Length: 330
Length: 220
Image 1 (cartoon, helix red, strand yellow):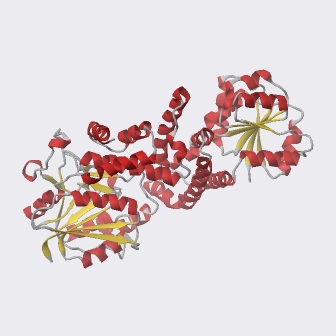
Image 2 (image 1 turned 30 degrees about the vertical axis):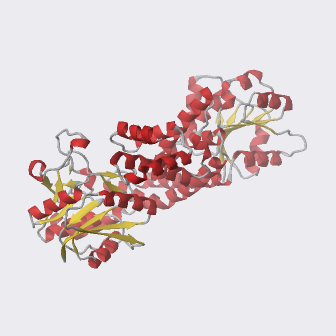
Image 3 (image 1 turned 90 degrees about the horizontal axis):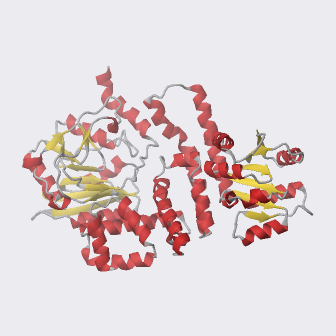
């Protein structure tokens, strides 16, 4: 069951929305705040609340920058239905957060935001749509099936973990190591969902897709997975590559080389292939093939940023030697 | 048994890593008169089953059981290992990381592990010397690299997974009164791409089996 956090704001229309969500089979936890002003304490309370449980997204009627900011920092999607024109709120930089899904009823405002290059807004006029259809469209745009499966698996795991906490107390070695056995099924289910979801996002070959992956890995439950699966551990190295490439793209327009990868498996294979190649250059392994190695690195079409990161993270002892070999053979 | 033969034995499920691992083996300096063999074990039921199968099929006196994600970077490893074995027939097994004492909880990384010496040497100048660098006597070694000069069956009757086969084999060696040693390395002889994350899904199951088999007497 989809579970959302509803940030309430005493708007008379919220009651009806709440009822409709529930009738659509969505579990809703209500969150009340007197004012969603841009204040640190409001932000912190929201982040704390979102980290306490796994919500598919946080929802509000109309857009609030403080919620957008908190959702981004908690790695949770922020869905809102923008009905009233709030010029100030929409002009805040927070509208651009990749975690936002802002459904707008006002065509003029939607167009003006789109013209500013903002990709987090969607035009969804309410005319001719029932509330149920409106909710269904919102969900379709916001959540992919693999994302839903991943979140479902996370929730199952969390429930299981909570049930254990009640029954046992001490942190014995037995308990710590048993947890691997006990959690195995849940963790592999999450892994399957997550890999497929990441692949969906990679397939977009876009900054938005990659940014969505980044925020996804900011979620505390997903951060934990890197302690169980090496794939997610290595992905963190690759995120650093992406972030640096993205920065350069914004400053100089140079291509982001990691965008070419459609599958996590290919991305990780390329990462390790490069690690292996650079080490072969360092130790002089199969030196007769080193020219071919350079050809293959060129064929990979990866950036100098990618190569430098692997040089630093790939257990290379004599980095200068490898750099020189690259320079000479390139 | 062929006294001039070294056999590398690797259980693998990953061609990409295995091929890379083999590149480093092929790169090693081979002492004159030494024959080399490589056994790749695929689809093994367990590490012990795979190792027993390979052990029984090779006539090499010296066998090196290792992980497919271990890349040997000491070009003279074969010289160093053979010199060590030949220095003492009582040395049954050599590892590259070991535990001087098996801790009570049998979690090997919770006790002091030995591998590195304290001499600062640049990699390009580094060369192991048995006489100067020496080795440690240990109770158990890490399964990433286990070189033997005697064949002792792996306990596939007990360890039918991928954990604890290394500590078990260490105790089997010691039961037969062989020493287990780890050369003092001033530079690591290998790169282990175990990718930081340990696969501990069945670790506790085999830890319990190990305790029951080898430590119950000590507890009692």
